[in-house]
Every structure is written in C-alpha cells, then in structure tokens.
Length: 167
Image (cartoon, rainbow, N blue to C red; front, side):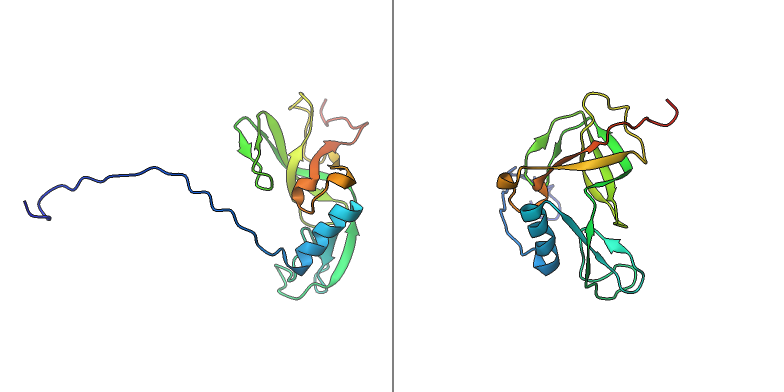
C-alpha cells in the first residue's frame, strides 16, 4: 500500500508535563513584593505624564509609554470594581492550590490606585451580598508567614457597616 492512499492511524500518548521554573521579578515588582512582605504595605507607581498610579507597579506607563519613577503608598482598603461567583474549581496561580467552589473572585481598586488587583473576596456563605462599589480591606498573612509573593494576600473582605444598594 502506498503511503498516499492508505489512511494513517494516529497514535497518541497522553502525558502531563510539569515544568517548574523561576523568573526574576525585576526591580519594580521586587520592591512591591518586599514592601508587602516586610511591612504589609502596598505601593504603586505614578506616571509623570498622566498621573495614573499603577498597581502592580510597572516601569513604563502603558498608555503614555514613559518611565515611571514616583512610588506612591496605597491604602489597605479599596473598592470592588467587578466580581464573579465561581462555581467551578480554580487553581490559584500563585500557590498551585485549588480554590473549592463556591467562592468570589473580584477586582479591587485600592485607595490611591488607578488600576485593579484581582483576588479572592471572602463573603462567608452569602454570595449575593457583593456589589460593584462595595468597600473592602485586605487581609494579609501574619508577618512571619509572608514569603514575598501575592499569596501573602489571603483575601479581601467587606468593611463592616455597609448596606447593599437596593436592599
């Protein structure tokens, strides 16, 4: 049988490839993570052209393409700008550990920042209690347990005394 006229059987070998790696965080992200680890503080970086404060900090402003050099301390509280209730498991990219559903994942704009940080928002069992505009605060691991990455943030939680609009 010629190769061209015969149907070729495709054989597959299913495997899972684990490729552990490390990469340098760079000067800006390193400073951000060290401040978070050692002092429990968030720092963003302000663009000298448009004044936008980026979190996580970037060496160059995305819209303006100019070098950022002014560090700005941000608050530990912020505003929920978007969220979703997850009903499927999600592997945490910083730890490799699964988050068992249901849980809420949200975008938080920390006070003083112009960009968002995405993370778990802990609501207890009331998944209908979140809303865009809800005020939240960060909950960090205890100082002695922090390792200098985003897993040092346990979650965000709602500030007390708020009422969901329309309730």
